[in-house]
Length: 369
Image (cartoon, rainbow, N blue to C red; front, side):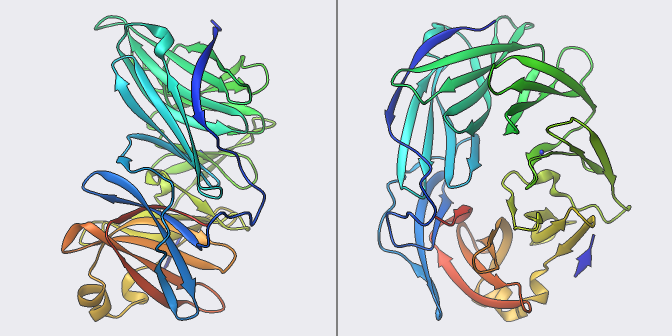
């Protein structure tokens, strides 16, 4: 079916090692590494595929089971997340699924006693970014972005204070873009731009109301998504292009936090529906043509497969295997909210269902090491 992104330098502690390996350097024989949720716990499962289908890999990843984090991010094979330890301390973990290795950082211990809330994470090279808010009184908050340098033995950091609450961060073209929200006065969004080399604030762009999400496309430009349109911000020249949608044909990728692209720059994501059992369905958005392709289960599987054999409920994850041109769809079982499955769907030369794998958890995010 078709329808139409004051400086202070002190030290932080770190443990373990995480780096991005060379292509095809995989420490275990698995085609995919899948993150699953079950009763609020995030765990991992390795998966192998053959011509006859996909199956569970008995080997265990070194990823440690954790409570499902509220703040997380992904860049390539690296998955990062923040865990609050006390009112004024936390821990950031980076796990590299290509190397199957983890690194953890204790953060904010330098602040003493405070009431702190971390709001977002980003990662680029040896730099790790965490935005946070400190409540000084019931009416006064202070906002910061902390840049952590992981390329040294003692992880140092730099704090930059902002005048608005940071909501989300992305890094592209040696610039950190911070989506902010003016809580005190206007209720409007803005974009703070920080130079990746100097860590200086080099500009701020007003975005108006109701920005939902920001992310980077395959050209390194920033996509700023609203419900009714999106803006493409050139990360080098800062030129903007506004893309609107026909009424009733909105691609709705504004609600998708984890995005996957193919080599043509098409976006693979889960799209909200108007309700029903499948509150989200797989979709692909073509930025070049402002066109979304929607993959309703009824057009791929039989009614018996959907309802009785696989028991497909809501779509929880959509990704793309570029090496094999396969659409990867994670879903929740309709009769058990803590179990799910993974569908593999061949896209070319023609749409073809390949296989289903039942899982003891609900797919959250998938990695192709």
